[in-house]
Length: 102
Image (cartoon, rainbow, N blue to C red; front, side, top):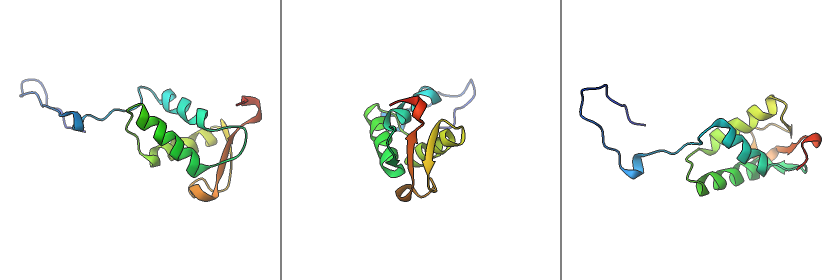
């Protein structure tokens, strides 16, 4: 992101390529993640890829690493279940908790 100058300095111009769109709230990213996770176990790599594509389709710029970090945070908060080491995306799986439906 650009370093913004205090008042009194010339305004900075940003081109469209320099503007970075992020989810409007952390809940928006959580909603996208939870919609990609089902009751059946799914590979972490597949979920990260699905969420990343959905974010791109919505014009949100977010890295796959940030998506994975948020999935890990959801698991640590007890909102989803996991098997394996979530840091190893191809050898771990996530799913909704049974009471969440899906």
